[in-house]
Structures are given as C-alpha cells and as structure tokens.
Length: 91
Image 1 (tube, helix red, strand yellow):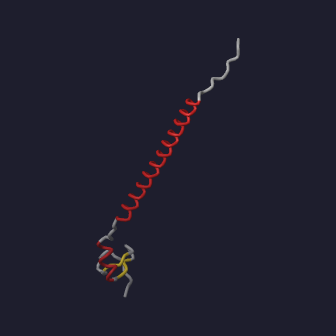
Image 2: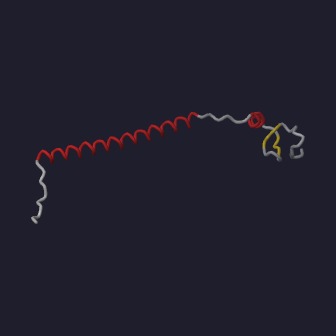
Image 3: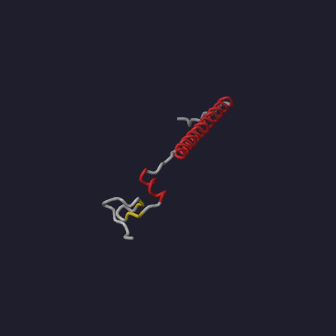
C-alpha cells in the first residue's frame, strides 16, 4: 500500500478558512462586548434604584427624639415621660 500524501488546500480554500476564522473571532468579540454592556446596564440600574430609595424614620422616632424628652431605659428611646410601663431616671 502506498502512503497517502496529505491533502493540500488550494489558495482559495485557505483564504476561505481564514475568512471563517475572522468572522467567528469578530462574532465572539461582539458577544463578549454585548454581555459586558448588559452587565454594566444592570449594575447601573441597581445603583440608580438603590440610590433613589428613601427611608423615613418611624413616627415614634421622630416625635420625641427631635424635641428631646426623657430617656426611657426600658425601650432605650427618648419619649415624653408618660409611659406607665417606662423606666425613667428619678429627678
């Protein structure tokens, strides 16, 4: 049996293979760029929504603490000193 010679590609076949490689490489780069842009847009949306969230203190935190008041040792908050179950420092 004779040894087979490797098949040689014609110059047109080599050029076609190189074109396919270039197209696949460009497609891969485009895919990576699109994924990166999507992740960046998602992070920007999360940052925007987190920054836009407003938190308001509860009513009991606002009313007494702004005006001062007496420290209720049972709750650890300032109030007007009239809580019957509260523990206050004697005058």
